[in-house]
Image (cartoon, helix red, strand yellow):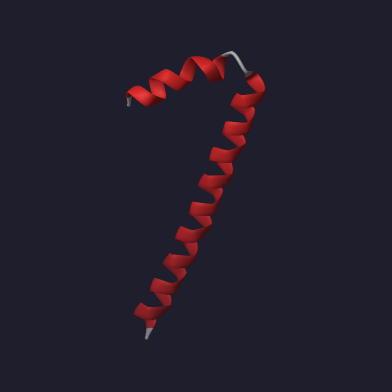
Length: 49
């Protein structure tokens, strides 16, 4: 928790960095959402049989 508070001021002074981090987080969320959908589909297939 203290680590996030320590890094926050640095990000605010560098807009490019904020955008990079936002893009990374968004891509990460997108990837994990896609993975969850795939897992849900596999589970649905297993339950169907």
